[in-house]
Image (tube, rainbow over all chains, first blue to last red; front, top):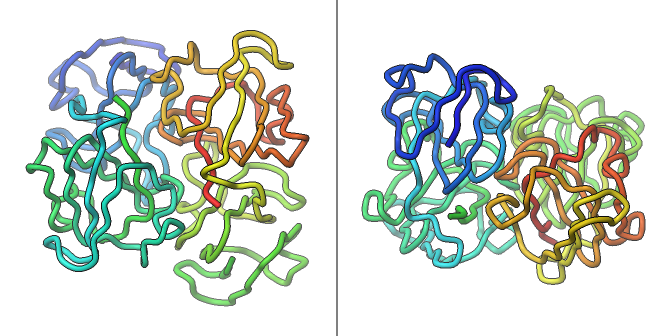
Length: 183
Length: 183
């Protein structure tokens, strides 16, 4: 991944092939544009992989709004990031549960769902999730909008029992679209 | 589709089963939240189906940021909308062309692509498109972010020869992710 301290791939440039816990410690004050050359990454609002999450697949992100997407509050920075190692478009399987702790109605998915409700899920929430293979990104709103939650088979043993385990920014069970992350 | 003039499904409520060219003429000053109960819709920034486009699939959109996604400039309103009749997740086929007017390298797609570059497309632009079946949404940035362009087999005969035909808000050929619209 190539990162720049100015928009539109201008200014100071650094290249990363592994995770970065704090861009300040890598000698960069701010990231204002970036290019993903290879693999999939997840960016975080704060250092040490905390705060809002943003999936970053191959391509050009000329401004912060290109990676931040739609957010309840606006953030113009990304302080840490890491590669997503388990991403696999072909080998993706996850179990969704109505209740927390893998309780209630369940549904196995292995495809992308821009609207879970259109595909038969009863409401706008998911209680818990178990990732069997691959890596997924879940979104608060339909059509891949709102808060993002990255779920991986090789983190937490793939178990996400409660929204508190989805990320430090998660405040509700609301999830309305889900898709696989490309390798 | 149910629309409300306050956030979180509060205030005045109206129900629509067909297109609306100007919400003001339907007796609504503003739309601040909405629920899609059935089908897929496209919302527009301005009246008469002009300006930025937003695909709306089944689910809950409690605030404007839930449907607007990530935008170069912020808009808090949606002045017109219409159903997308040709949406079909199973019967979706489109030809992408490197150059305008269906020139240059071509590529037929029938699946979702969160990163066109990860799937082998050479750059961050598409010159022209021909929709054979279904309805698609193309995005400026990877991961379904940025400006949206709705492409349908039953509009313009499915032909989109130049970015000027993608919508009144289109200013460049930049497209980095594409997905099918659910029925």
